[in-house]
Length: 510
Image (tube, rainbow, N blue to C red; front, side, top):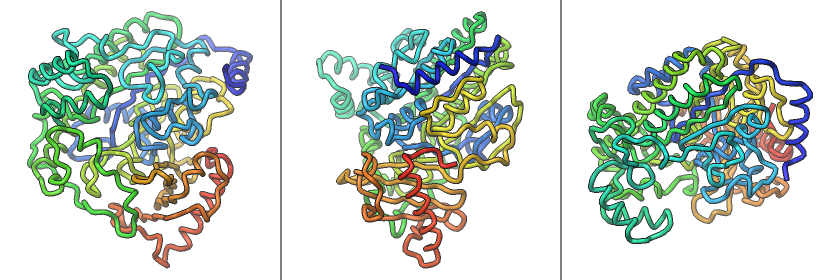
């Protein structure tokens, strides 16, 4: 049964009526993309196409995801609900089953008369790519037009011949289950953290999806109905695989390693990810990695090569938008589902409440507003859904928990909230939830009993540990200031704000 909020929102939408020409929406989701891009100030990244895209719209310097793990982040952003509302906090739960009242922005636009289409890694955190979201059937990786007509081995990741042979043996073995597949391949040294081969872009799933994206844009350009197209890029998620030409853009020896590879003084051990994701690759020794500087540089090289590869794919999509004339009436969103640690704090993953995991790129191009620039406004992923509704002239569903960013798109000095919220459970006992409050200068993480995320009334007695970081004086998060007498007024103020936030049902903090 559809929620009352959803039905009321649709009723309001149809009462107001649809205009003759609604803007199209192109949503570009990029997995594990941190703001290590030219337009964000990187002098290392090779991202000319994303940089040009940023010049056409507004770049958000302080965008934070609601939880730095794929499923929870996507379930939250696509539904406009915080993790405690979607009840997706891990890689197991699914949004609609956990919260039957939830609906996605694609579903909402579809029911408003839009053609909705998608491919790639999109609805992670939903079941079977969420059929309710699409008016045009979702295109899965195995159905994409790959080079050589050969899908990459092991979940659309590798093209090495030896890996394909190992994967064939896996399929012949009859072994079932994602985890067992990974172990089978790793045991045969057929699951490396990187791959560099001289192959065309569409030998991998992101290039093949871009080829499909170009084709469907041509089809959509001939339709009179507006569209909402979602392309979910898999890289730079591990493994770092990209055609050799993108590796050749960089000198591996020139990469600087993370300058602070320790735990922050005064921080709890359970705030740190143990490295399970990276440790699952057949050529990674987690114990040796802190001292294996060559392997660290290989991983950093692979990350940047993967980002450059994705940038080239986005360039192809932008070129097609221009060729078809669609760019004049298409809202474009570039969103990273979370950041990524490249060795800082000795972490090589996401799965934390630290800056490198929770901060990700967000660029919005709104042709009708035609305003450009960078903004320091604090924003969250859940703000995207209401923003797109307002830009498209659709009623904003009442249950959404974010705030429209249209005021910031119109004036980059504007602000719609005082802080951004993220959260992540503890690593270990799994009895705590860390609520991360990020203001322009500080981050406070309050680790409290997990019952609060399940709906228990907030009480300061449930708080076990507090972290506090000052990014003006300590951008690398080397020391928590929570016990420093000079920061007690800051901690008290932020705890008061957190209490209000939690007691008001985690609504937008405006």
